[in-house]
Image (tube, rainbow, N blue to C red; front, top):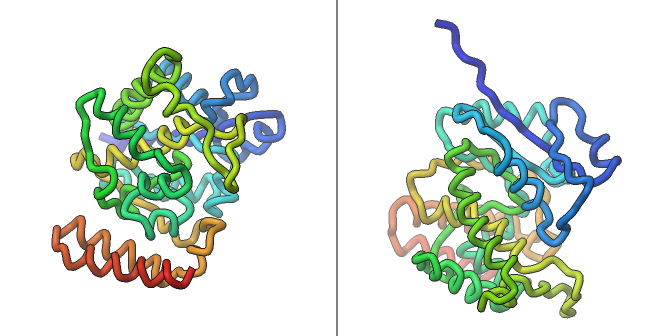
Length: 277
């Protein structure tokens, strides 16, 4: 029996004619030119696709912003090849940029809290409503779990779980009378100023659901691309690449062994970086 070709569907989200025209060389187009709900950013077209399309259970799907190549340096062919290379070993393959943002924090929720005070409490309250109480302040995530910007490709089973939790978030954020509505939809803080039209907190929570699933549901297998080669953050943390590599390696070792000495060493590396940045 001949081998069945691996089916990998990689899409770029088109917001206008220019971004649509950029979808060349194999990329599928996820049309969001109507941009009916800009407050939900990428989730709106991704949600529409996942709710309306019949997914091939043997295939892989990814939905990226038009900035994917600018942030990763990868072409469609390179991203496709990396997924194909690791398809037998994973349920999720990630291409997350900003390696320093993942490396120097215990997890992506602690990272969000630094830029948006109250993020963790709002997230924890929402999760608790559904009986899920992960320790968002202490859970350790390394580069296998830390994903930013929804830069991942996954099988339908993972996408269904991702959609389940994001639809629960969607329901709360669409219900003005819900007690958590205000906390989850408040504008985020940039440059010390709260802008009414800024990205709402719900978007950054939506972008962290994949990381939460990978960290808390260990049956999901993930393989990250070497994000060291991607775009780093615009903070001073990008000035410490060696320490970022050490930090991620120590967190990996802690997750794999449970030995507290690795976490203690991570804390010392991070403290040294903080004292210099």
